[in-house]
Length: 94
Image (tube, rainbow, N blue to C red):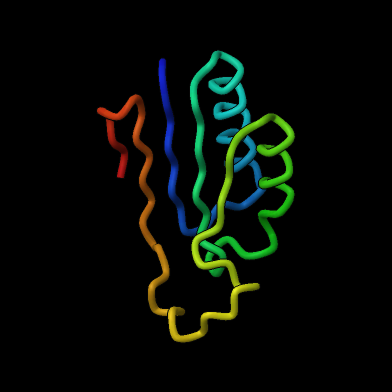
């Protein structure tokens, strides 16, 4: 990546694989790449709060898809199960 990375995932654990992703995203951010991460609140849940904190500490923007603190129960079926990463606005991994 030279300009941007956007990542949207349903489940993002702070495990061995998740930490490798975080390391790569942080390295890209330090190179000047704009990195944005969207995590599904139900799929990723509270177990990724450490991942959120690691990315935020590095200056990476993260957000939650329909955060459960909003209590929009009728929207529960709008979960985002997709796994999408777009690099530099032209290379997509799905």
